[in-house]
Image (cartoon, rainbow, N blue to C red; front, side):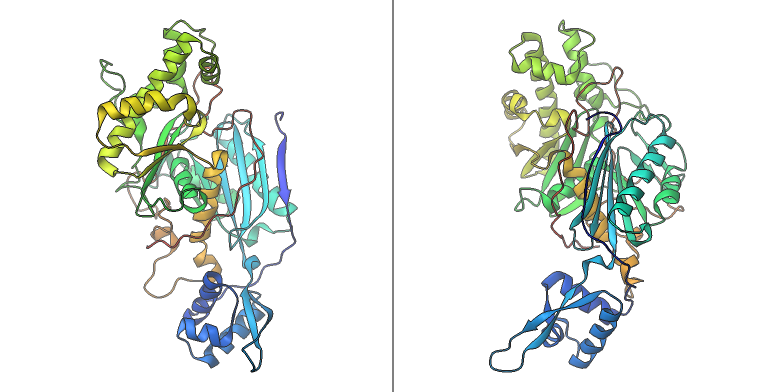
Amino acid sequence: MTSGESTMEVTGRHETPRAPGTPSERAVLDELKRGGPASRPQLASRTGLSKPTVASVLRKLEDAGLVRPAGQSSRGRGRSALVFDYQPSAGYVAGIHIGHSWIRCAVADLVGTVVARNDVQNTARSASTVVSTVSRVAHELARSAGIAWSQVVRTTVGSPGVFDPADGTLLLASRIRRWGRPGLIMELRRELGEMTTIANDANLAAVGELTAGHHPSATTFVYLMVGTGVGMGIVIDGKLHSGSRGAAGELAFLPFAEEGAPRPRAFGRRWGSFEEAASARGVVSTAVELGMSPRVSALQVFDAARRGHPAARTAVEREAERLATAIAAVAAVVDPELVILGGGIGSELTLLRDPMERRIHQLTPFHPQVVVSDLGDEAVLLGAIATALEMAGEPVYGRPPAGETSPAGRFSLHAPSQPSPAASGPVAAGNGELEPHPRPAVDGDADHGRGGARPRTPRRVHASG
C-alpha cells in the first residue's frame, strides 16, 4: 500500500436521538443493553421498577429514539407481549490509534459494532500534521457512514506517552517532532470534540485483549509491547492497573539493561536504559556490534535469523534474554497468569521463545505462559473502542446518576482518563514508542507492511469505578 492509500469499510445511515437523564430511564436502558430484548413485565421484574413506571419510561425512550419495538413475545396461552430492544444508534464512539507508521480509526455504535473503519499510512513528521491528519481521517470516516461528528459522544485516542494534565503534555512520547509539546490534548479536542481522551497505547492494547482477545479466562495478565519502543499494560483481576501516577508499565525506565552496562541515563531523557537495549533500536545496535551492516533494520535482522545467519541469530537470542529479564521482574511483582507479546518485535515469538524461556527459568521460579497477541495490529484500536464505550455513559445519558462522578473522574475499564487541569503529575502510562534513526522496519505499532485487517467487536466488560 503506497503513501496516502487507505482501507475503509462503511455500513449504514444514522440519525441522532436525544439522551435520557432520569435514574429510571438509565435503569431500563442499561437493562436492555445488558440483557437484550425484553417486555414491560420482564423489565419491571429485572429493574425493580413498577410496571406503570416502566411503561412510561419506554414511551419516553421510544420517542427519544433510544429504544425500539422488536416484535411480540408469546406468554404461553395468554396474550403476547410487546418486546423492546435497545437502539444502538443512540450515539457512536470513535477509537483512534496513532502509530509510527499507521493511523487507524474506527467508529462503533453503542453496543460496540464497528460501522466504519479506515487505516491510513502516517506520513506526518510533525505534531500539527499528525493532529490535522487524525482530524481529517476521523471526520471523513464518520461522514462516509452517514454519521455527523456531533453524534460521536466519546473519542479515545491511543498514543505513546505519559500524559501530564498540568500542561496537556505527552511526556516520553515518540520522535514525531514536538509531539510532546504543551497543549496537545487541547488541540486534539478542538479537532475531535471536548469528549476526547488520550490514553497510552500499551494500556489500550491490554484493554483490547481484555475485551476482545482470545484468552477470556485470563483476568491477571500483562501485555508487553515491543517494537520501536517498549511498554506494558497490566491487567489485575480484570481491571487495568495504571498506578498512582499512571506510570505503571513504563518498562523503558527499568534500572537495568545489559550486565555491565554503564549507569542508566537520568529520568527525563527520551530513552530509558531498558528501552534503548530492548527496542528495535537495540536489536539493530546488537546486530551491528556482531558484524552486520549498519544499514540493517530490525525486521531484516529477524528475517536473517530465520535463514540461519549466525550474527542475526545471536542478536535475536540476546533480545530474547533481555525480554526474559523484564518478564522475570514483572512475574515476581504482578504474578500474571499470562504474558501477551505484541508489537513488531513481540510478534516474533517463534524465534524468541526458546532463548527467552531458558533465561526465564534461570532467573525466576515464576514461569507465566508467554503467548503472542492474536489481535495483532488491532489490539490498541479495539481497546480504544472499548474504553470509549465505557466512558460514553455521561454524554448519552445526559448526566451521571447522583453520587457518581463523570467519566473523566473515574476509571471505566480502568483505562487512563483525563483529570481536571488542576491535577498535578503525569497520568497515563506510556510505552515511549520512539522512532530510531535510521528507522527500523519493525515498529511499535506492529504494522510493517501490514494493514487493513478489520477489528472484531469488543466484549463489554463491567468494571468498578
